[in-house]
Image (cartoon, rainbow, N blue to C red; front, side, top):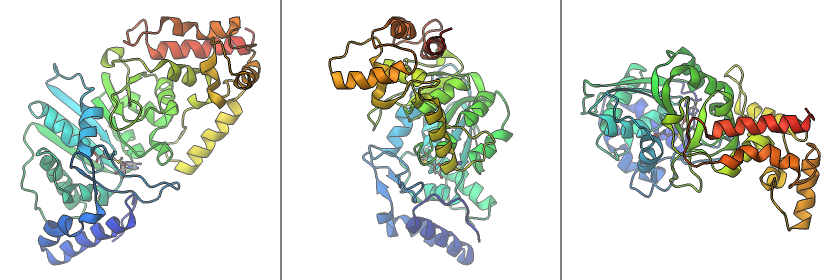
Length: 397
Ligand SMILES: C[S@@+](CC[C@H](N)C(=O)[O-])C[C@H]1O[C@@H](n2cnc3c(N)ncnc32)[C@H](O)[C@@H]1O
């Protein structure tokens, strides 16, 4: 049997594959029933009592699939709480990187009275299988487990139907076991109220944070739909903007900074991005997004290509991000050494000093900054306007 697309650490990956192989040969339910207790040390207990697992090494990094602050709590905080769905009776969610099924289960817990459709997309069968082996952190996880089990039986990975809980009539769960970049190209346009984007970090999975992937989001999401992701990364936010979305700060949980929310409609969002984030995304090379034009490049090349594009853009179309140069625009600086470095970077973009008229001209959109986003006053509008103004100054237009 061939298992592709492994992302789990080798111990747990081998144990899970072995388990389902034995189940197939013996048709004995005990292998599965005893698995968690026998192999507990291979799981990671998070602060809220829910379990996670560790990944294998990808691009020299190993990550736990969920935050140590609490796997299921993060699902509610980052993915469910931002959804303004009180008045919707029918809800359709695309859960990208479904993993152990926590985000989908949290959605079921929140919207179980509604007509709910969830499309889960996950590249790795053993990871989905892991979702049915761990203790359920909330009762609704048993519904997700049933859907995962059905799908793994259909795929001939699992052999026995052991999950007791039936999927209620009003809930429809589809599971796509494939690269999300491939799956999304076959999904219908204008069909989702929410997209959960929950990959590993951008250095491990830049392919799931690319501008080109986000262009597909734009196609499949409804006009008032919302994208929730945990990262506050500048290239990710820049990618959403270039793909046509409004962006806003998402809830903070288990990390220093808030996540990101994106929508075609500013009404679906809450707060603006922090001001310095807007400035850095608009004016410096950190705002160069990841590119994956044919949605099939590998992560190393995507990282390398972005590094190259950042280099090309520095002192050319963007202010250098070194020493966070753009955040000093319009500021008086006391640190002479830092000031010299900042002003050297600025001079290459035809900005004579941090307090020159050019500096004030570029940053003018930030004068009207408000935390609450509105149609007139929002992060997207300010960022696009600052990009235009930098171009005018650099090219003496
Ligand atoms: C941080 S974990 C997601 C946790 C998950 N949302 C949950 O509720 O348990 C990231 C997941 O992304 C999956 N993944 C990685 N690359 C993928 C791809 N190209 N397409 C779909 N899933 C992918 C991994 O297998 C892993 O399960």
